[in-house]
Image (cartoon, rainbow, N blue to C red; front, side, top):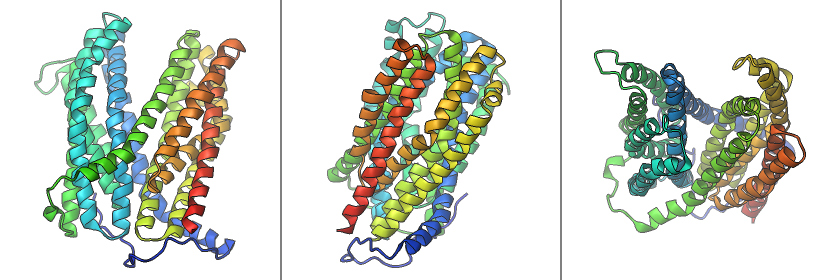
Amino acid sequence: MIHRMSSLPAREPRADRPLTFSSTGWRSHVADLLGELPPTLRLAWPVVVGEVGWMVMSVVDTLMVSPLGPAAIGAVGIGSNSFMAVAIFGMGLLLGLDTVVSRAFGARRLDECHRWLLHGMVLAVLVSVPLAVAAWMVPEVLARMGVHPAVLPLATDYLRILDVGLLPLLMYAAFRRYLQGLSLTRPVGFALVSANLVNVLANWTLIYGHLGLPAMGVPGSAWATFLSRVYMATVLAVAIVRAERARPSGLWRTPRKIERARLQRLVDLGLPAAVQLVLELGVFAAITALAGLLAPASLAAHHIALNLAALVFMVPLGMASAAAVRVGQALGAGDARGAAHGGWAALALAALVMLVTALLFASVPRFLMSLFTRETGVIATGVILLRVYAVYQIFDGVQVTATGALRGLGDTRTPLVYNFVGHWCLGLPIGYLLCFHRGVGVAGLWVGLGIGLTAVAVVLVGVWRYRLRHLET
């Protein structure tokens, strides 16, 4: 589960070494880029596995409460989505650790890595309090929205149990960002894959009352999720301890003084990323709500196609984390050329994966839809949606990976601005117009989404190139 910190830079960077990106010919750059692909892939694949495992966990909760009836399914769905709408802000706030830890690691300043870990943990504790209060109040909002009386009590119980596990979830996020910054990504993948097994066993035990325990129904599923998140945080904490034992680096001698400037630095980096995540989650929620105004077959097709797209999206999401780490480590080592190659390698891998899956979505969409339903109307609409997504699928992967590369440079504000403009000011209005005023239907919503994502991808890659040219000077 743990491997040694073998990816420390081979040479000690000098403080006066400038960040240069010399032009040595396209053959040299291609060779360097190809050489960057294997380490980037080694860094990314455990994170990708972890992202897929994260998505599978929520699916498992839904499947295991399904025998309890529609109200239970609805309660788990509403409760889980409502909680994540709050928790995602805290997890996004900790994304700044990617930048500061990877740069410190690239500069061979493990003492700085340790200080950033401590401040990340403190920030997790501080932000957990207002977010827990916000999550606790969500059931009141759901009641005012008119959620069905058969669903609301179950959703309230489910959500408030999840709220108890908010701090372990944020601690997991802090530990994960620290480990990724040190290129220790295997524990991340292991934690989420094994947490799914814990979640399945706990669901089976607590929902239906096996192993001598009382049957708790929907609250049992919430407690299973709580236990899984405590388990994930514990696994990563153990990973940090084992890494320190394998190669002592002074972790236990880290000064306990909390510096306001460090917390402010994390907030400055993480706040734009957190707002961006909330806005992205919001635009997909808005599109789903708009799809809910159409025929049930359109909504069902949208839901299935979105799940397939989200599953594939986990790959470039993992590549984005790898890009942030590789770029940050290279800059910490004073190697601007290495930072460029790390970012471009992640972008190339993400684009390649999304090209392959786009060909899959375009060639066998009917088969993919039939895995979820036999309703001919749902399948027919879903085929159209998957082919629409195939057109802009590469851009979806590129935009999220470019966001990670820019995060490695310390730029989290630019992706926020252009994601807001692309999604909310361009994609959503065009989708609404096509869907409801041009008679395109739910496919119009997806076309609008695709236009917004494509625009964001083009702009962020342009910004990435501009930032690299700036590093030359």
